[in-house]
Image (tube, rainbow, N blue to C red; front, side, top):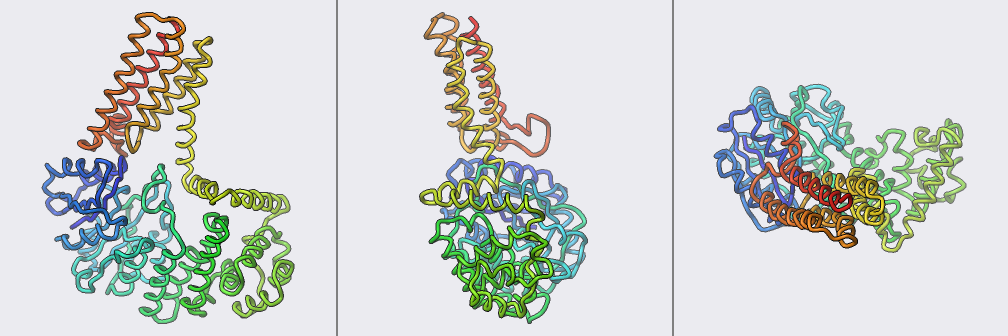
Amino acid sequence: MSIVVPVFDPGPWIRPLLDSFDAQTLPHEDMEVLLVDDGSTDGTERLLDRWTADRAWARVIHQPPSGWPSRPRNTGLSQARGEYVYLVDHDDWLAPDALQQLRDFARGTGPDVVVGRMAGMGRKVPKVLFRSTVTDAHSPAQPLQDSMTTHALFRREFLDEIGLRFDEELRRLEDHLFMAHAYTEARQVAVYGDSTVYIHAERDDGEGAGYRRYRANEYYPALRRCIDTMVEALPAGPERDAYLTRWIRIELVGRLQSDAVRWLPRDERDAFFANVQQVLAEHVPADAAASLSPAWRWPGALARTVSADEFYRAEDAMTTALRAQVADRPGSAVLRDVLSQAALERAITALGEDEPLPAGRAASDTRQASRRRLRLRAMGLVSRFPGGGLHRVMVTWGRTPRLLARRVAAVGTVIAPVVAAVLVGLPVWSLIVTAAGLALTTWLALRSLRGWPTAARQALALLPGVVAVVAAPAGGTVAATVVAGTAIVAALFIDARWRRTDVRAHASRTGGPFARLGWIALTAAGVSALVLAADAWALLA
């Protein structure tokens, strides 16, 4: 079995994956790990060289940066020698028996593609799809459309026979296009749901390909190709419509409803809307749109037929109306105050009848409706921030709350020593504030991308001690401060070396407390304790 991993600047998130390779129950002589380094600049390239040096079953392939996972994946596929190929991302990891279970299952059932059960750590993963193991899966009975990422097992000869590779020109949805071809051209697709094999992990640093800002003019041309692939490959019917309605719900209408698009600067928002409307009108067959569930039929018809401003006025009306107001009433009766008669007629024509609005999206009571109106006004103010910068920050923080926590902690590490310096006249309180700041510094060092921010925060934490020394110089206190400063500099150099040479420097997801912290965080904790001791000596001497 070949495992192909595209790698680019993963920092500490590479260790759980490498640990999971070491822990596999499948004999290592039966597997090959291909780590395709796409021009990493954070020291990972040298770390992988060291890691693979004493593992005959793993190798690194270095190549110039391409800017997206497609090319390194293709490089790995071209060099894979296994009967099966498993595509894995560099910041996820595998269950210990994943490769053994998948290989045995694939050999026993003979599919071209196996989608294995996934678990998420801070990430959403399909649930219904993996309720049972199915050897010959088809949508919608088995919702394969819920898993359009390429974290699956493929029979290598199948990929070679149909010439399936990633489109290196795409910067979005290349995985959807790949899976659209795989699902429609495979002789047999299986779902393995007996046990978890793949763990999707959330990165709390806001980095990674999935977090990069994307634009409508690069996203929707790719989606058009995905939809066209399905329309050409499958006859009209439930299987085809399962894939198409998924894209309508998530990538098309659902994207317009999201805060990430709704509150963009107007020109960017309208570009998204225009692209969505074009895809719905020109690429999604009308009978597929008609198969949407009731919750999506009115939004889908509106996105297809009205302007962006009209769409969002209708959205606001649907979400702030009371359920009692929309139940068993024609949708036009609720929307006629925000839409013109002509717009309503176009939407009703697309629907086929003037059906009720989706009650599930309406407010349950007046208090919820008021809260929603208040939120709409607040987000409207945020969207007016020049350049949309505040909106982008809020969307990112909302998507990754741990990133917000890290940003707040980083600010706290700057404020704490300043406050502690002001409180030098109250040494105990000064030390408490300093200790809090250093605790945050140590936490931030866990899965940090580089060493200098930790060193800078620790140096700043010496501020209250320095203030005390300047106010009342003493040989011992000066020496303690110098020792702590020297330790900070030494740890910085050691940190830089460890990041390039030993994966154990980073935090693991398994093992004892030392492994789960990693050498970098342990060193940060030790130096932080030394800094606190130096401050205590200076303040209490």
